[in-house]
Image (cartoon, rainbow, N blue to C red; front, top):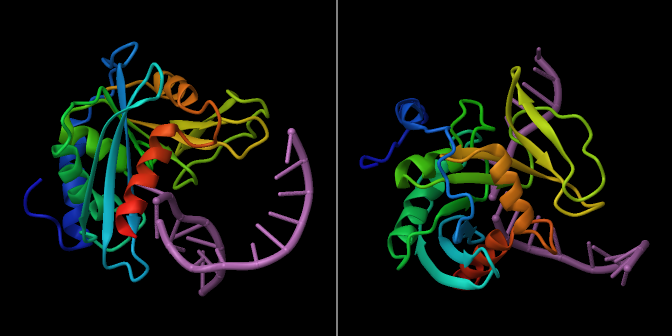
Length: 218
DNA sequence: GCGACAG
DNA sequence: ATCTTGTCGC
């Protein structure tokens, strides 16, 4: 992932190339021992950022490892090219981890992307690890109303293909957008997401990472 | 031409 | 992403 793209055209070309390395077959562990949450926080002026990766033990959600790094946004924010902004910092944080997590859970989308290569897919390819995304809002796709009870879901469809699921993680609370990134199935990603949301709308992994990078920033 | 647009 | 007050509900 060396020469970082400096223009939108270059970034698009990178996505085009890396997309070929995506593995959509599920060879992820049936019962992953650890799961990693990734998130980034920005300073008010948008000039600085902090990236965090927190690894939790799936069994009891206890913290196994944490890595946080400071840096600068590596690209302007452009919908569809969002990954280029955070990946360098996230990769650095992942590199300083003392354990190799079984699955990555990203703050953003995977296949639910205009070119089917969102942050979760990109990070999955770069690390080789199973990865998927849990987004708070949609980037692409349409869906039918989701049932009210926790666990209800509706296919997220874009241009005729299912690119993810709109999943209710808490009864009566706005659903989240789950989409596959690499080496994992949508069903397994949704099941894992539910395992990680015993109390709140967002996965504990995401919440832990969000807190970690926010702390370092301030 | 007019909206929509991950974080 | 980040800035923000109050407000509703368990």
